[in-house]
Image 1: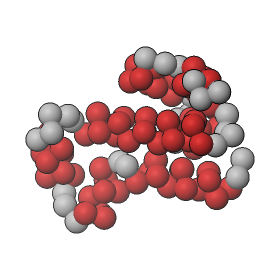
Image 2 (image 1 turned 90 degrees about the vertical axis):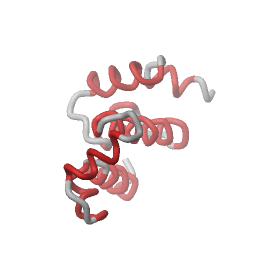
Image 3 (image 1 turned 90 degrees about the horizontal axis):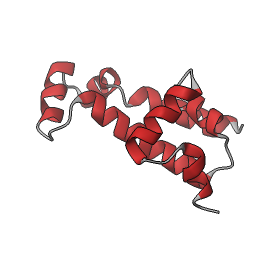
Length: 101
C-alpha cells in the first residue's frame, strides 16, 4: 500500500473525532456536540458519515483492497467496517467497488 495514501487516510480518520476537531476549531467537545445536534444528527452519526464518504472515495478511486481501506480508516476488524458500510449504503464495500467496473 502506498505509504502516503495510508498516512493521509489514517490522519483523516484521527481528525474526524471531536477531540481533534475541538483543538482545530478551538471549541469544547460539549459545545461541538451541541452544534452538531442542531443538524439532527449526533457526533457519532457525523463521524460515520465522514468515514463512509472517505471509504467511498477510496473504494472508487484507488486500487486498495477493502481490508486496506478499513485499516486505513481506523477499523481493526474488517467485519466492523463492512457492517457499517452496508448499513449506511445498502451495499457491501465489494459490491460498491464492483459497481464501478
